Image 1 (spheres, rainbow, N blue to C red):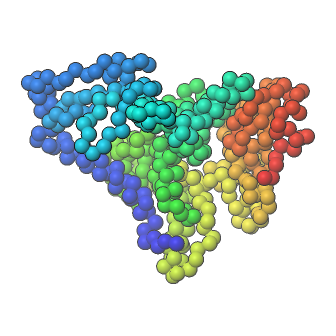
Image 2: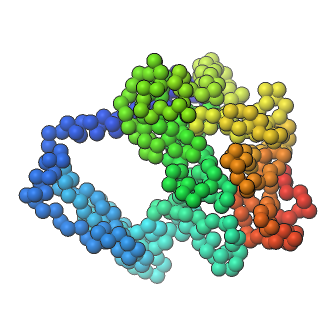
Image 3: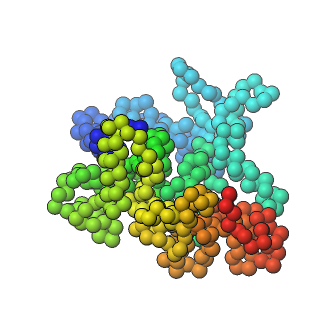
Length: 422
């Protein structure tokens, strides 16, 4: 239970951080010492050390990370070389000198069994993503990987990359542990250039950190999980970078309309109001929760956030009659006839991921349209282009495919019932 005097406080926390960055940049520009001219003069009279080959080459064999060096105003840079598998390394500590090298992407420094000194070893034990990669590679070697199954992509810290794709259908956002979160788009050849899911990941972290079963206000995202370039709290608005969320304009009062901001897009925003229909309902719920909590009542009716991080309605909605849950489009309307009676097993397992993907693909006139269960979930078996295969709850292929005439050999084949309740 919590008390909330201002329902927009969480958004303000995020925006204050952005505005603080912008203010710090302005203060830096006013600094009478650390200016570009100062550094130009410093480098003319004090030659910077030449970067190591690793940082100058940046190839598969030689690579490293460039950091500001310990020179006045960090006018010079230094190179910390990426060490390779099996190279000697140091775990460091207080008082230790700055290391000349660190274990490269996918490696960490540890003492392997039978060794006396630490070396760079794979992150398999501590990284879910690298463990998933190894499992994929092992299955591929055994011939158990289907043609639509994608190898997990990991970053240098062993976390999952933010985008996962189902070839020919959609791509969606995942968190660092590979769990699906908000953000989805039709799969295209260059989708990962525009789809990076930073806002979606931030929203998922905020919900996890707050550990709240009530609606949570976060930065507004776009449909792909990036930051909406227009962010507002009450009558104060600012433009932000779609990938970093950092301010790209000054903070403005928009009581006369939003169109004065350079990031205003009439295809995405209304000039007269910032809040979307779902956001208005959500804020009203938060006010009610605050009022009930102040009166020391237990709040039970708002146990599910009805909105997505983009301000539109979430995939699953409860019908006003209270008789059934249904799969909703972003405006809250029923998608085809995907629904499940309240308190039924179909409703308990309902995720509407297939229904949403199906609508997205139909709207884009795609030729690859998935078949869904009555409650909007993916069927356990899918067939495309004469071949059938098993799928997970996100629609991704599991295992190998079989010709349609041999689909009974697949482990998910169940005589035609591909919508299990459990």
